[in-house]
Image (cartoon, rainbow, N blue to C red):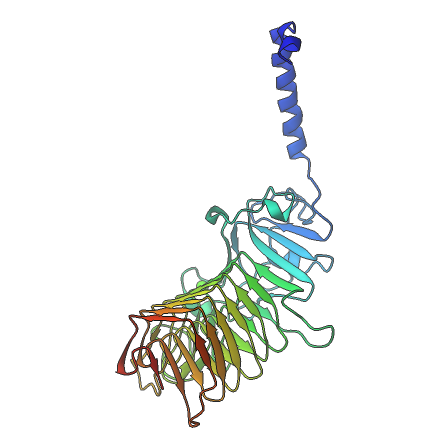
Length: 370
Ligand SMILES: [Ca+2]
């Protein structure tokens, strides 16, 4: 090659390189089609809003979800709100991003990738599904549930056919009794989706909006799972909250005929009346594998009853299989890390190969209480 270049005039080489650069720029400007079934979303796109390429990406995530031909949605970093696009009304707190069977919704793209394998989980491309609609930084008008999923009929929804990956879900604000909790994510009947690499943070459920929260029933600040068995892998669930009193599950509440799994997840600084990090109720089961519960707490500022389980609470009709988990610096009145309570004397849970360190309880059971 060096012999070949030796006799070519330098000016020819320079002009050829310049031409190549020019052609490259033009190709970059051409909208490259994405794999079949993939729809692109980029809030900053200025193209045809078809979702068929990054250049022509949908600017609203709801428009991509409404595209019935989409099997996979790629979202470039930025902020997306559930009241925008897809026929939703601006400022409507009942608008949610609704997952559906046979659809994967995947965030954290730079907005140039041609294949999923090119995505890097770079925080610069954080994809925020924000419930902070209406007046910015005021939570009383925020989304009641930022993300919802349920499914009836057959074939059933499974973690293998429904995915939400690489997004942050934040600032939901749910009223228990009216919107039924799960301000970040509500997995209702048959909503057996898979959540990978998600952050669920700063969501609130209370008997009425506002802060600090009043007493009363309020279930699931971050996530509510009801008659569903979703799977959460490598997710961070932090700074979610319910009210105190008879509230359950600052991070997650699991109820009724549910058997979800949490694998390699972190629960940090969540708070509730019971189960600051996670609460199991009404005969449900949970499988916790290689999870960290750190700095979750129980709220006792009001006339709270049974302020159990800073990290995890399980009522005696329910159960948990906890393997290879760490509980550190969680606090409660009873059972700083873990509490099982109720009228029955049965203990249905298993706790294997776990670390309990630095948890505290003001009444009884710094680590495990009942
Ligand atoms: Ca707001």
